[in-house]
Amino acid sequence: MYQVTVHAPDGAEAHYSLGDDQGLVVGREPTCDVVLPSKKVSRRHARLFTNGDRLHIEDLGSQNGVFVGGARLSGTSEIRPGPAIEVGEFKIKIKKVDPHAAAPGEGDAGAAGEGHLEGQAEMAGQTLHLPAEPGFVGRDPGREVQIDNDSVSRKHAEVRLEPGSGHVVVDLASSNGTFVNGERLKPNLPRTLKSGDQVRFGETTWQYVAGPAKRAAGAGLTSRQKLLIAVAALLLVLVIALVALHHPASRPARWGQPVNTSHQGPDEATLIAQGQQALRDDRFVDAKRFFTQAWDLNPLDAQTRMLVRTAEGELHNQQLFNQANTKIEMGRDQEAVDLLTQISTDSGFFARSRLKVQELVSSLMQRYGAQCHGAARDGNRQKVLKLCPRYLDYACQTTEDEAAVKALRKAEKATRDQIPWTCPSRLAPWLGSGTAQAASPKTIIERQYHDKDVREAVEAYVNGNILQAQQAIGKVKNKNDTASEIAEALTIVSGKYKEGDADSRAGDQQGMLQTFTDALTADQQIVPTGVTSWYGQDMRTRLAQYYATQGQSSFDQQSYTDAYSAWSTGLGYDPQNKSILDGMTRLEHHAEDILDSGPGCDGLRTVMHITSDSSSAHQQASATYAKKCQ
Image (cartoon, rainbow, N blue to C red; front, side, top):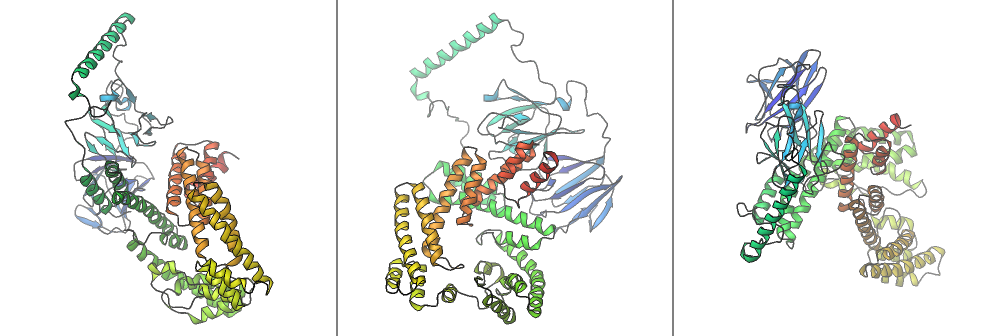
């Protein structure tokens, strides 16, 4: 067994264990086993692993390399314990340890395995016993080290006992941070505690003691002595209150919250500057925290509120980017492209995602193009309809493949109710402007409605002019069944839309839900598949926001299954609704927390009920449930 020690540039140390036939991934990504937060460290920089009693290191294609003794290593190299490994500004030292050896001081009062935290300030009198096995610090009652304070996250930090070192604390990207001796810990970077260290979780302060907890003060007092102490304390409180009444100037600005004259928090401008620096460093959790604190100081500042939303958006974009990288490593390039093209074009991740998309699409086009042309040569209409759109979605962004388009149009024409393929404009930012002719909404309407008068009415409706559409269709509504049906559907949309809009402005969201749902049913009878009307888009956007609000309410009440149901319904109306996408991300994180707690069958069912089938948490819960609960 090996002990891996990471020396940071600021002198901080972190310790890890590397067992036989195990591995540790080193990099900047939070998902790595050893997280080194530096721009000089690649997201997945290197891997340490053992093969029997041999120690190896593998460079994972890092930009700045791995160095031992000043020499840069390439590929996989066998190394020996002792010489420092240089990764960016960090130095990694490895030594072999006996896993059965006792920790320093084991068996006496200073045993690292009996370390505990003694409360300071408002936590005075409380003691937290730290487990020898890895555990979590958090607000939830189920945590191994529970702190009942609102400033502490539900899953705030990890504590564990490292052989030969003592207790280690790791911040888990908590909202209010973990501090050791006044220094905020960087997320996922462990810090070894020494006896006497001041540790702060959120706003609660503790002192680490490497030994068993002392006997509680007053444990040996008699009942009479305890009563006398309590009476004395009460008299002291009364005296302080009387003094405060006679000296109003000494009262705190807010009752019950004494003014701390020794320290003033950062002002709004400082917090915004810190948040902007965190954004530049890809520390989006910190950025959101700084911007939120600045917003709290000035809740009417719309610009600061937008900064909070920017940080939240970048957190979501970062998750998409990381998920795509995982798909690439698994060889699932198409899924990676689907994830990358969901990243906002105004995101800092856009430039990086664009390069990856172009690289992946280059190989995907060759494969899909060959399949499309092969199906066309074979005259296999079903395969043409399935394979050619997949190829043309990418090809149309930069070039024009007339043969593929012609084959697809021929197959569409011979297939009843087939939705004509259109070149997707959403891919243009990643791949460039398309040049191939794709069916426009006007062309799709022309193909479905051959009657000129009906077509003009539908086009007017699609463009948002329902009055003009009703006037046009009114002239010919008795001409044929199609015109009659369009006229009836326009009447329904007109009435229901006005009714739903009035319900919305009156605060009757349930009424809006019902009337807009009826109006959308009529809307679908008017516009062909592949065309979106102005009214349809407006109603879908507002219905999605309704379900976003419903889901948030359920989430706040910890009704996570109801939140998932509401948000899933909302995405059916507007797949790009940012509030819902952010909510789904929070549900995914909650599901991951459940899995980390070692859930039973009920917990596994909960995870499956609040995540999509394609999410990693859902798949892990499903696999565990199949083995454990069936």
